[in-house]
Image 1 (cartoon, rainbow, N blue to C red):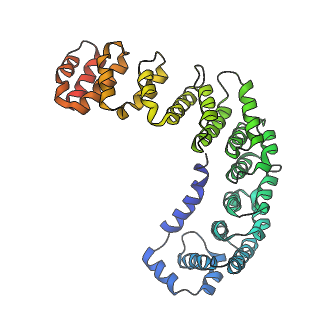
Image 2: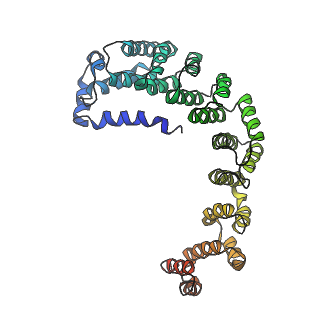
Length: 356
């Protein structure tokens, strides 16, 4: 979800670069263009025009970050252009990207006004996500009460990026929205914020949830569990993964939870992989198969020794792995498979012959 939110920014940057007449020529012109000329040219910039002014502006912004005083002055000047009536759409979007780097709390009001405008909202949110201080958090938090639809979803995600615990109450309300995208984003944000109240809300809903757990709630719980795991809090993460890996949960959720349980075990996961590989549960077998390549040879020998006890699909996976590692030593078994009356065995045998 959060990666997709940056697609527009990347697209705009790509357009800026692709539409230039010549990268080398633009860079040379930017090196020659005085900063004052770049400032004058910026408000009139349109997509497809020469990029010399933007490249010169990039340099000016980087130089301005040398001190708090020059940073504030540069940000204020950018904000004035952002608010000017004659500034082009392309220039405004570019300015928002620059304020993401150089912006200060003083620029929050002009950025906040853009949150209601679809053509600027995403870029304004990117800037507000990175501007330090309570003012930016308050602006995004306030937008939760007024925006709707996609603009509201975007604001929810930006609040999550800032991990703003002050917005938990608003997210609790939005989690019950009739708009499924809004409700899903709000639950996801609670998992991302992860403070005590947000966690209590999520776990309370999860405890009362039927099986299967609603998709948006399950995804939020997975996000929270993954955060716990990364921070070394294995026991609470394990409890969530176990709940979400229960039979009856949605297939994709179960797989993600089972993967989470294996990650928690680290180097000790080998025994679990072996156990799951022979498990009657096809989802556990599927996850184990994905980790089969990581088994050391001694464990592979154990699987080969009990090959007849494994489900058919598991047998094939073991034989293919053994063939990829041992080559000609597996030839008798592979030839036998290739002559089998069962189509799936015959095809597996032919695949293995190419590895011998």
